[in-house]
Length: 351
Image (cartoon, rainbow, N blue to C red):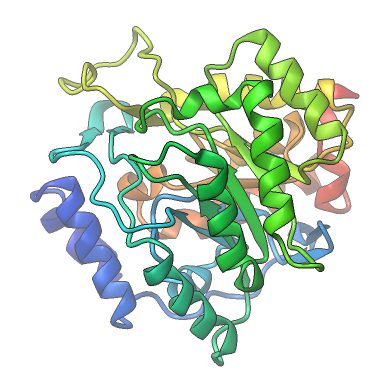
């Protein structure tokens, strides 16, 4: 029996944020799983000049300050994303701010970019790159400070400080838990932010991605698709958590404020992913995230247009063994449908 299986009943008895802190501390102390088995070659792909052994990534939010990169890569993820990292340390919103919706296999959070800031993440990322366990793709998700009135400067500061240690960078303007943040997804704001970030990057920059919300208006979706086609960003992550509350939710916490993630997000985030793929004509690499809890879910994202996928919430309910199950099921699905490699399945539902 795995350490996680033994600890899971205890972790569910304590508040979600405390359980998360204990999990991160255990991983940082070396109590995580051993190295995973080699990936099935059919799962390999090349995106942005990076070689991914498999397309299954850890979404931002789990490892905010870069404490558990090597253990999570060791679990079998093809890549992990650290953050969101804000320029200055900040506590975030008042507790309690994470709520388990167990009946719905979902979570509502209103963390508000709690972060140790650049000063916490940068040294860990640098040590990871220099260490013997630095093999693996690590992206860095950038946020803005709650009290900042210059979002572009915040994102530029994060990019300048962390670009050298990141395989890719993400501008996160889609969290629902920082006042005014989602308004930055409007074209008039986005263009200026991206230009400032580009100016702050080194001469040989990592790929720059944009993470968007699932609740965008049609015009904003079209504007972002057109912006991506200009090459201002190298890819999109679709999507962040949602402020919507589907009527089928059963948990007593369903009315809590914050972003909803987990199974209820699968359908709307995949629909947006498909629409963005359609509007960008498959020319912009997309990362599909939101609601993935099985190999079938990951495969659906890929067929809808995702080059890569990410998950987080499902780990809370199914544990780390989920990663291996997803990869096995995904490889079987690819072969069942006659694909020789993963790239052939990307956007297959649009053909």
